[in-house]
Image (cartoon, rainbow, N blue to C red):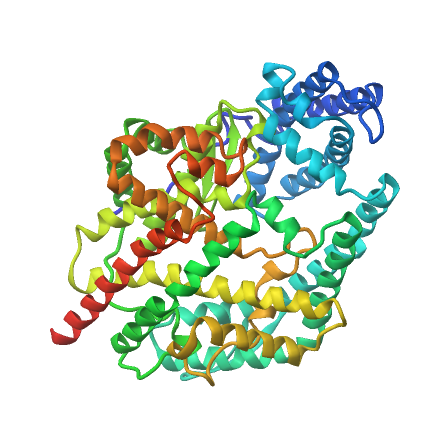
Length: 597
């Protein structure tokens, strides 16, 4: 591995600093423009029960888009400072101020939906060229507006949120982030945070992994009553509010938010279910690689093989090479990202964990990640640059046309991640190939198998919560049953994880239920598109950028149809999963080869 410096991003070309007159002027402009927008909404007036005509609607949408574009740059600039250094008090203070702006914007967008719902959205969407470009937004707004409670009830619910669902979610986060665990490690006991304990799941030492697993379960048992209260509170609230808004089933609103219907969900979940035996083959092969008869839960993330170290420069060159091989436009975007300082990859104190990409202004993005000298970080870099490419394709759209559901948000990132992974697999062999295949399948298993278990768990919790609250013991039983239906005999029946419902923060959001299946959709949709690219590269390139530019302008099924894909049929999802089955076969062969060697 060659010596290299790891980059920090450049924000100074947006504003010189948070203390600069330029930033102060931009922030004041956002506040002033919000006041003007609110005055326009009052003057039109934009509210439930008033007439919604095309000329006034176009004016309102144009002004709303202009405000949202201006607000985005200021909001992302501040958020980027907080993400890069959570100790930066001035950034935190600015973020708190802007949160109030977002609250006011939410009130206006709710009024806009209610106003649109009172008109003929179909007719309005054909009235002018500008409104035709916002057809998808208008039709979705009509549905949301029709599902609102009375304005007073919606206002009351918004005001109660800090003391209701948001409070339960905050309690879950506070308890889990401050939970300390004593782990009886082979070299002696240590007191660790829960995040540190869970990171031990990646240790190459099985005794360390097992000790961490046992200590983790003991810790969750100590707080299970609190965790169950949080989950019951949130799911109970969701059931009441969805009923008052006219959603017949807890799945209906998440499906609408994801821009898919139930037939698509069922086709996708059915194909995933049929693939479980393939993933069990992977898990059994991993057990053989680790010289085990059967994996325990604490073996799922155990490393296999030996991987090389990567410098950031090597990662940059490798990703750039294969982006350029795909298309000049994708390559040029990646080169800009590196040359113009879009990427902050240096791990440091105060910087948030994980990785993300966010659109900043026009066709620019910023990427945060924490680079480690492993292929995993190369993959993360490709993934986040895929999001940046998606943002590039969306740049010509107005903010109300760019709103992409989570199901489609991973389309470019998974595609780019797969593009780079396939290239990497062609360049390595032996233990390094084994390690790369395992790391990829480990992530795929989480997305297909574990996400399926989370969906089954949440569906059953909602079904039972309609009648009464559920005890921690019952929640553990539902979790174990969900794991049995997905992992099956590939995992030791006595060494699973009954408290995964307490671990995952995704369950603890009143505003986003079933925060699981969109991940599965995004992963498989990206893989399926990659399969289409392999079959006919030139035809694929011709339509791919247009698809990415339209993810906020049409339902998922309509976009997929441009490539001849029927999302409600299992064939497409099976073709996506076939890409993963090829990796499973390659992994099985690599494990056999390592044993023979």
